[in-house]
Length: 247
Image 1 (cartoon, rainbow, N blue to C red):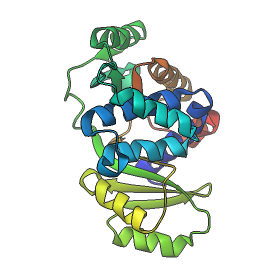
Image 2: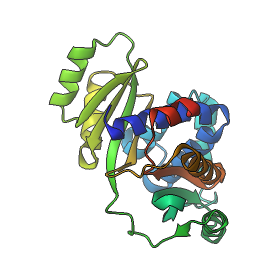
Image 3: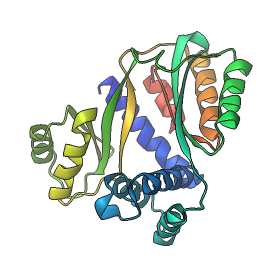
Image 4: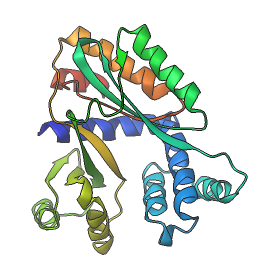
């Protein structure tokens, strides 16, 4: 399995765990609110909201929760949220890229900096990790009745860079600029992804021994547990041994 496919598989498995903790619900509700503020409350005329609603269905968010989030966001007096990113290094030279959605940037940056400092990491400047991560479209699709070879061939013809089938899920990777095109292709095929999002995929990986790597994963968890954080990406090499402990 290619490096970015392994990363995407881990993200999907963690997503199922996050859903049980309601972390996924919180993240998607924020995405719905930002999408509505940006493009209005009608999913048909707002591609970003349509994607957020699709992802909400993928983690089995109740319809009433989705409707409530859209209505709340459409209220002109509702809280305004800002999207922001943070880049830095964890011990061992592991690059960490954090995406957050917050109503208080000062609180968020203070929390992020505190975790970096406490565990001997360092918060850098925005853009400092641009040479390490590529932004890619990543789609997770249950296999269901799809025929592996036929589906992969059609998706590759539609512009996918990579397609992997594992644990009865297809993981499709596209260039960032082909994300919207792939969404339209899947809609034409009447396929609704369990998740579809832009992820930051490492170009290079940092390998550490097992104990050091487990400490890094604990730091990543601390970032993910912050209410303002929506995504954490890193370039720690996820060995099969580490992956088995994360399942």
